[in-house]
Length: 253
Image 1 (cartoon, rainbow, N blue to C red):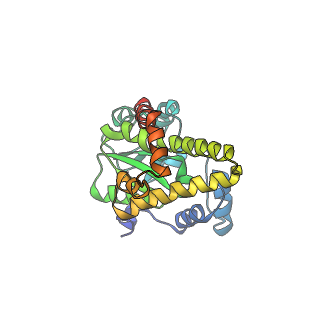
Image 2 (spheres, rainbow, N blue to C red):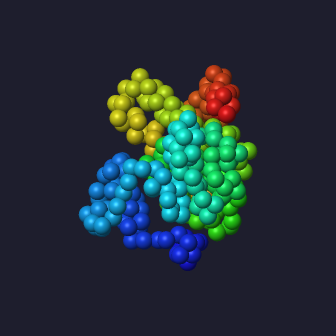
Image 3 (cartoon, rainbow, N blue to C red):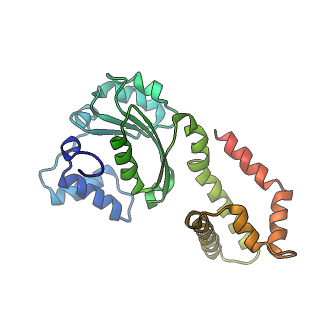
């Protein structure tokens, strides 16, 4: 057994392990051709193809990471089989719709919604499953947990969760940008301001994730009566900070 699946079923190979190791250790953002050329140095006999149908034939797992409007034409040509596992990374394409594009509508399917921090192995990746078993669920969760945090949720929660985790990363970065501008106005160099704010966010996230605490508890620790922090917090609220965040999240749903 490896990763929760029988080896025979997943057809593990040294080539796949080499690809995984390269993606986990490179500091670059490689294209598929770059990955292929790297692995080919170690395994000269490895083959690749630019033909989608040929690539999917015989594959245990097929990951479709294309724009939503490309899903139908791409899937029509693949003719996936019932024993294969389909993973869709296309936002907004439901399981019901995916089922219309495959030969066997009852085949195991996953919907995967990562965020851009996956390039740093820090993604908050959302996963929904249909017609899968426990072994398949555990394997997919384990596979993508190597690229950040993974959460298995019902499909009907995907839209709301996407607003929080996928769109939400942009809202967090917008805060970083705004805080940087404030720092620059107060005389801090842009790069220094960015480092200060980013590290503060990283620290805040660690406080919550590592201590089973709540944001309000951590805020209370730094908002002493009459202090400068509570004045800033109140200014945020006077200007509709919480309301703006809630409205932004709901607008993204």
